[in-house]
Image (cartoon, rainbow, N blue to C red):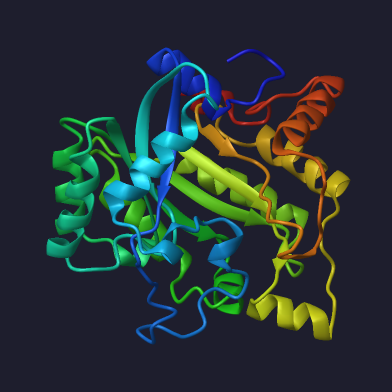
Length: 310
């Protein structure tokens, strides 16, 4: 990795595969244990899946049809595509019996163009039996499990109605590692009761875990969520763009350089966003981040202990 550069996923994939891997997002009608009453109701207080998911669920499309729709959409839009990953994004995609999961994922993997599987889920929705199934798939496919954790602080996890603690996430990582499965973690920066010092500690904590990829996004309030209701009654402090980028830079300085960054900025449509709404594209925001890092002569892992580099 060149100095002044973030270890971005796009460059990593191009180097590894020789071109672009396009993810096709699938909605398989899952739910979450903090939605259906198993561990709670209402889901995470910040979550509105319509702000990042697909609309295919509204059309009740079969998985193969959703994939075909993704293939059709990508033709002519993306260059140098060398493979496709089926990305099960919405809700908790291992929250079902293994027999049901096999039917869902096998249907996706039977499609010729699919070369990999990305499964978004919660750390409390995984077990060794399910992991053994995914491990077996790695013989023929790239398999990534994306664990949402959002925060390493149990107080935050309780306040946002996650229904599990941080140790649950650590245990899930320990169960998953060593199986040939790529591990991605997802965190949110900007909860108003957390501090910059806590976010830096989060970078250090992520660096110690056996994760391959990391997704980060700023806290933003979207409509039709419990957090939006709270915000409308009593607005709370949210990071502005400049504050968030400054925090990101310090975060990245402490992050293990071998961790591949899949995302640094989240977005929702203007119609769904309550606050803050940043008009810049992700491309523009990434460029602004890199420009500031170059100005400060810094890079991912600059403050990561050199004797721990890997």
